[in-house]
Length: 195
Ligand SMILES: [Zn+2]
Ligand SMILES: [Zn+2]
Image (cartoon, rainbow, N blue to C red; front, side, top):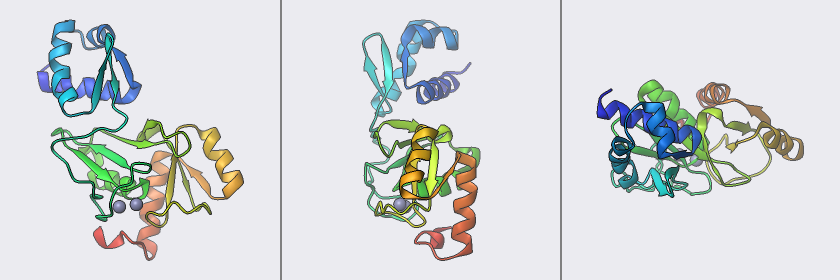
């Protein structure tokens, strides 16, 4: 495997599992721990992962020197950490979207051109992988970002409970992505101009 492919694989593994030991990575990838350390260096410098004792963990608030902007890639709204949706591109850049609304639309635009996306759990503020997150649309709570608004949850149980209290509907990643696309094409949305 080329170093660049290894780094991509390492990034995918960490984004997926959040915490990994160097020995685990070395086993998974099939290279020495020293090579893993070397491959991790750029990821640590990019702010995607943080070094821990004997391992690495996914940074909860990745910062990238490549993208210092705190404006949404789609609608140019100022990004609020509580809702921020981040997309990881193969060329090591990170794109920021203001919320899952713009994030999902951007994910759809990019297709397979992005490796991973992460977003915060609305209740717990933990970082979750967008692909396995649950999306709540049409809820009565106002989050103060794009319309139709979308909230993200790590656990379906939380999303279901939220919907019970505040209304709306729960979607998986691909369902939410298609649904938001249809919705903004059907009628007025703050971001439909951008697509
Ligand atoms: Zn936006
Ligand atoms: Zn937004």
